[in-house]
Length: 109
Image 1 (cartoon, one colour):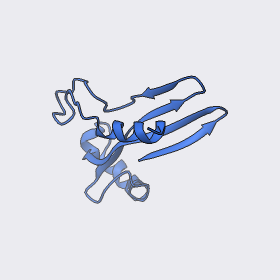
Image 2: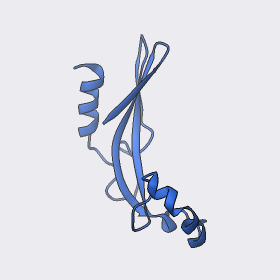
Image 3: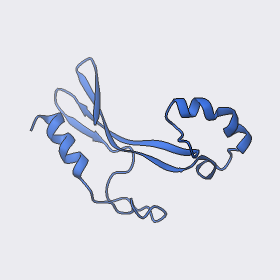
């Protein structure tokens, strides 16, 4: 999925790599207390940031910036070939499925 907007002669495509439940909020945010989570649960669920089991819902994304002279990929998150031993599913990931599809769509190829 890609969302895009333009600023002058730049076009910026937001390329969603993965939207998924991730880890319980209290586990992900060590400074978060059960009391603060309780106070914020309603708006976080309404904003689709927290599921019914208090697991964070995260969006992992990259950006493609097109200028009149360049096309730039900003890999701001999961990406490939990055060591992440604590997250085996992402450790040295090599999947390019979403990039191939988005590259084709964004570049018109």
